[in-house]
Length: 146
Image: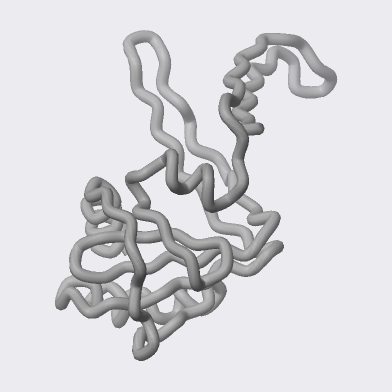
């Protein structure tokens, strides 16, 4: 799993947008990846393309690491739930993302991704500190896009 994540993070650093001929590219459902992680990691190492389809309602675990002087984030059981279908293409050391499997943007091109997914200009980042029952002190972080 770590090998696949490392390869995908490296690939996301590249940025290019263009038409993709994906007729013979296999598609894997995100729900099936856990059982196929070794085979898909090997496929990525060999540079063989593939598509991962994340369906609306699918959840993917989030591993967030924050380490700054005086503060370390303690990982929990968080997940990202997708509100729409998303396709991720990996091939030739590059990653692309698509809302429909037809029109693609490079994973590193945030302007193209925003346009492709209909995101507006701007967003928000909020941090709050408060008290709640039964949790006691709570730090809230909220990130949003328009």
